[in-house]
Image (tube, each protein chain N blue to C red):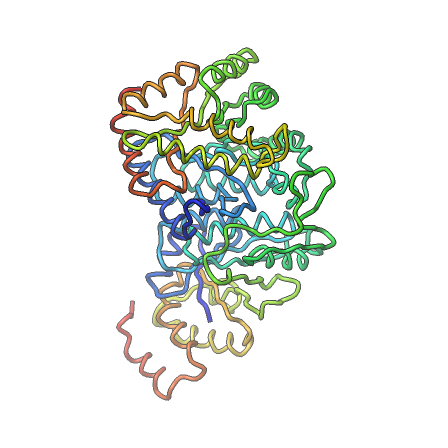
Length: 298
Length: 240
């Protein structure tokens, strides 16, 4: 639901399409639909994923609705707990919480929060969420911890949450992270975000994914050699990681790439086609092909 | 005057409002009214959705973002109704000022007693901003914002949702049929006389039909043309 320099769009239209996309994904039998969160960025990245998912909940029947990620430290926890409970109710128990830290200083600063306190806030707010659910006697939603850094893995294992890994990891890195998580008693499941493109145009798509990641890294990332675009080589490396990890080719080749990550210990792959530069007909064709031509091979 | 129906089952209330030609539904006293509103968006078309939320108990920027996303889902049908959160009454006025800025599609800086946006904390070193702009923007020129009657200031011109059935009228908790028409008319007379500033009326979902066919026609004009009410009373194709 982004309206970027590369592909501008009207948000009202983008949200209506989101509901249509959710309905198609539901009809095709996908297990879950994932929505991310950022705030105060020029492209209107969705700052309230629970509310976008509630919209999807109203027009779908069985697909699970998850956040990848909900930036826990940036939300007042009691209101968040009420919103999550309400989302779980309107969706008939289909909500899953992917919990992320957030990393952009301007997001924290606008809310009057210190970014360097985000780890502490994460712990405190997760406690508050769990307490709120326990008090009302509610079944807690399935929780996935986002990220791949050591504290995130330790936190996931300690709290008994699943792990939801970012798309930039290679198969080998996934294997290492999963081993680390398991060695600390992490009960799973393990999920992974992955970009993919089935059939014609895979290289071109991967190139555009790389540009998309360049814009994010260039605008948002404090890098070793400077901030964002001031460290062009590191931005380029980040983009290259993104390009390399796109699963592309024939349905057989995409299936093989997804089998590789599953072989590295991943239980759930969240495949992302939905970038702002992908037109809706192409997105729907990809969803069809993933469900009908790739999924049977997994 | 706007007519809104109220019911814990938001979808049922919205459908009843639509079928009775009323303006929409009021979601009040719910744990997360904007979640309910967003879930309703794709299920019932056309009706307005007024969601009453508390203000002052958390960052108004967060609330603004939730309202905008919900309004996008609703295609611009959201009415955000705010009332002071319990125990945060003294923060209400400032929160309302900040909320208004957050709902406006231009950059702003805000310095209040309780909130400062951006905060410019010395620990947040990467790309400190002088101003912020909330994105995405509401899908309309201006997102509709009402303060409920509990509001401390009444700064929005008395757009107070108030029950006409279920409390205000003596004995008139529900509109029924024939024998209560007189009572309904009396109720409206009282309502207009006592609360000329009311722009909104909220009623239970059971009252939908009577509200649509009896009450609403009678309050759309300042004065009914001679004989019209008698005609309505004589010709009742909607009679139950």
